[in-house]
Length: 314
Image 1 (cartoon, helix red, strand yellow):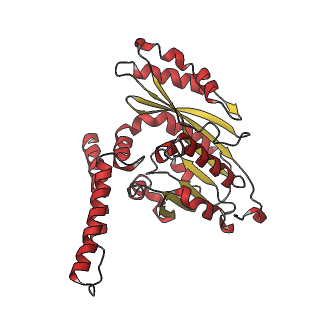
Image 2 (tube, helix red, strand yellow):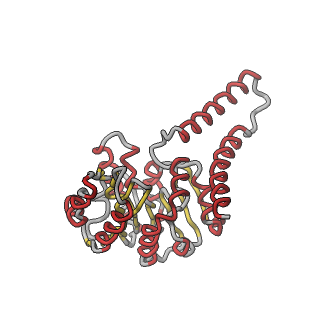
Image 3 (cartoon, one colour):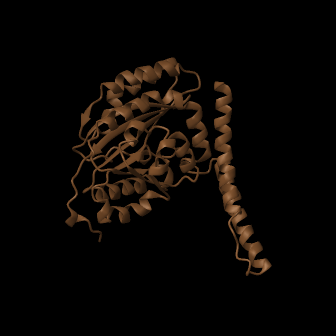
């Protein structure tokens, strides 16, 4: 039954792509247009859909997309250590507003239901066209609560934050800001985006869990022993204030892990060292993303009461 269920879920993901394609092609056209005009309109829409699907299947999207959802489905059971840590931290996040804004939650693969059930309305900004349908499959009880925008949240966030009705609405960045480097052309641009974000959020309550480091494992290594050892080391890291990357590397003793089987680990810095406010407490978790990829995830929150006279944008 489990195997049949697995195939059914993969089929659902692929069917979702097909439905996206059909929904675009089945839009009504103006019959008063000339035949050539209608044909041009159909061709443009068809080419757009074909290009979108080509991007999914050739993995050209910077993050998210079909490749991500299939990976999430296949390895989700191995993510329990991250999901448990996120669930614990969100349970302790004291926010009283009945509305929540989720940023980049994808299909909600790592979001705990008990946290989301605390809110009567959930606004979402996510660029992935597959995310909403799959989110509703993973969290069916939340369908009636969702207000979904398919958009790049960094483009629309300043306007949303400047609206007085959102003054006390908390924001949660859902394992997305560590991927910002995939959407920019340089490290400098990534750091600039993060600096802008900090400025925008200074008068709002918000939280984030995001990649700090990622490890690429060699082909031949004892993956499970590495994950277990990292979990033990990460659990000992509790920090209030910014934790420099060099210090994090030292606390995790990654140089010792590089000696396993005599094969080196490749370590990537996701440029999120200064993302959280300097005074915010933070915790860390291990995320075994895939058989050869392990991420170190940082979690933290900033609770602010927003004075309404500060809600303006220049």
